[in-house]
Image 1 (cartoon, protein in one colour):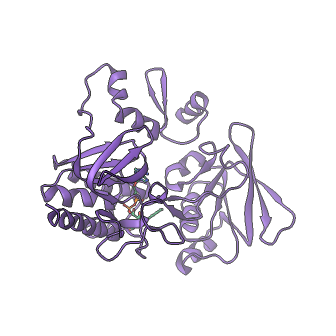
Image 2 (cartoon, helix red, strand yellow; image 1 turned 135 degrees about the vertical axis):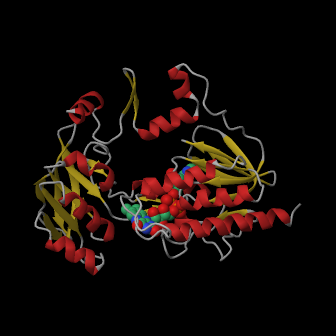
Length: 361
Ligand SMILES: Cc1cc2nc3c(=O)[nH]c(=O)nc-3n(C[C@H](O)[C@H](O)[C@H](O)COP(=O)(O)OP(=O)(O)OC[C@H]3O[C@@H](n4cnc5c(N)ncnc54)[C@H](O)[C@@H]3O)c2cc1C
């Protein structure tokens, strides 16, 4: 019932959708942007819970809000340095991960719980100002300082900068993908699977993320069409599990070429054979796109060196080659994309930034 009401009032099919009284605010990211600018408190008619973060010069600007950035923040604060952490959203990829079984100290922990613990630990230290709901669109050197400009025009200046902006979902570039984003097109099975309980859905992607998404959806949905060009690249174990699941129908050697709907919601998707050929239309209520990730490095493209995948090249001390600019975690070329690795690299970047500052004082 509540779900139908949400769809009727907002035209959206992703959670959460936020209202203050009768006023529609938008999704979680819209809320963060509003809150970052004190708008949430103003709408509630109360004084800001936290004073706004000023734009004074600090020792370090940390860009990002995942495991790498938050670990860097704790290390920086414990060295008595001043820092501002600017993130469009705190939590990073783990905030969208259902279960984690390989972060030391936990047999099992949900991604949101782990990242809440990271955030609590950062907030314990007064030296780090947290700015959430701001996306950095440019990092440059200005007057010998590192300057990060956000999409709303705010400028944060630091003697050093640590880039820890991770990765985001790659787009499929199928027709209808943008039109139906949030209305059946989803990049997060863990978040949105319950919205399609009992309905037929499609997953695009034959790697580990695609298999995991298909298995998660098969537990709730009436039918899951798994579409991927040959060969599947998922681990044998996951592939075997997906092949054994009766609700998953494999379309190996096919691509999703178009996503169709009734203007409000996805109603079908068209798939075509890999080498070209006749399209087949499959009625589905949602298409989950799980075709990998791309680094969030565009805002630093004029400053640091990127490899052919768009990852920032760093040495083993997280140095980018630009004096005073460091990078850590999934946004770098470091091979293993894991929480424990990103956290470790965040710590290394912070210690390198501290050493850089020491040698210049
Ligand atoms: C479905 C899935 C399951 C996974 N499961 C596991 C697992 O079980 N175990 C494991 O170890 N790893 C797992 N991983 C990998 C792990 O989540 C990543 O390796 C890790 O989160 C990388 O951390 P990070 O801090 O480098 O980047 P991210 O976690 O990607 O965080 C990047 C942060 O930067 C912010 N940001 C991005 N661009 C900007 C910008 N321009 N301005 C401001 N902020 C910005 C983002 O909002 C985000 O907060 C999984 C990943 C996925 C997708």
